[in-house]
Image (cartoon, rainbow, N blue to C red; front, side, top):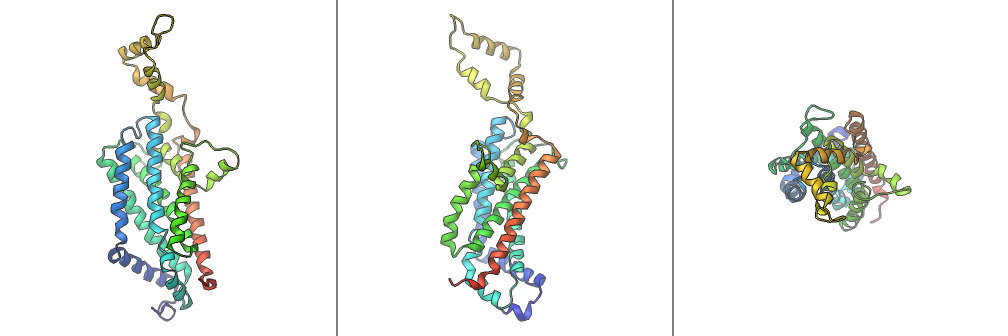
Length: 313
């Protein structure tokens, strides 16, 4: 393909390569990422979907799981796409290929994949009867807000993997780096690990951190009940103190008066997280940071490929 003579402009080259990637999607089995996304989503929703967006614990665990699905989808989408054809890209760059056009085509193609995977994830949640948010924070529809958050997490992680793919020698090296990228994201998500000092500052470059915050905010974490305290009290209900069972009496009184849900909401009011406040400003801030992560990754990808002619590998 003589891109130098026939496709000099950056825009024509972008659409030329976008067509190439779409053909690869059909004829080289790249479409397999979609059923894989459905299988992963179904497995995760089956495990954590019951209390997702119902209780604080369920929302935290379920949101973390959804973000993990998005991270996996994004990383797997693009971690090998450039390094597997590095020799071809190098040759065509010498023939006139603009790296910005090549990366732009990859960005458009990967974005379309991310949209499809996000839709699949939401459909799986709907099929599993997950109680998706009804009221939106940015838009009137909670499902749309949730979908946009999941899409941004998937796309940001996709672009990070794309940048790595542009820097790696081959697919083996890229797949070696991928587990470390995933572990890094999981540790910095803020879901289950309390970080301090320099480690806490690193969270600003973590797509999982902003993704988890946005999903919990959209899911209205702070407005939900906490079941941990109730379950703990219930567990010790038969313990005697001075010949009596005070916890059992408290439980019976609460249940008799139909105040269990009120108790859960009361305990949840003492377990709120300021990062999960359901406000427009908070959600848009998370979305903006996810966009910045994606944009920086795209720039890194272009810069890495601009030096491909110096590659002696």
